[in-house]
Image (cartoon, rainbow, N blue to C red; front, side, top):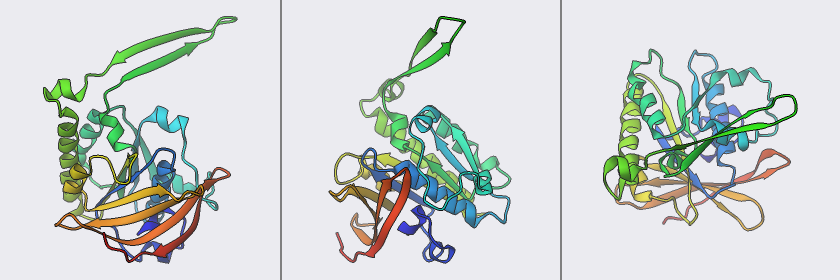
Length: 261
């Protein structure tokens, strides 16, 4: 299943179908967005003969600041990118609005991918910068917009957890509904700073399959597939070693891993 995040031969992509809802979690600057985008490309390739799209949900400014790296062999001008529809949102409300109306689609997308899902629930100030440049002067207009925190909106110190749970439940129900009429995958990503995804106890309630990324100490990264069973344990099957080099996503190899945790 880890090969779905890399440029592989078509027969390899179909070896094992992932669960309908999965999570990719890793440390900062490990190339998560690049992995998600390659997943989107593979999904678009699979449904290229049909009219189904792949939806990529993200924050526009963050994506433009740190665009994904493509795998070697992917032509940036390829028609396959026509099968990927970008949807830009600023907070969790944008995600909830999208999935609340999901059942109204005549044709469901082959996959919906949400980049940096957990970051949409962070308490922060968003600064919107508008630049205008007359003949000689640069006029900078900075508008500070305060976004009400999850704690304020839910009246609870664990408001962020509640917001994530409700949004995950909505995403889960929408995806299950779509899969009654055909295959529709939901892939989320999040950032963690330790050995396991932050708020793992929340994610495991809704997501049985979690991919984790960690550095190998030599500049490369290890992508690991874990399937969480009902008793909370996980079983790992494969590990992909990859790196980000020369502005490319490079797969170095995939190994079997029979260790049980």
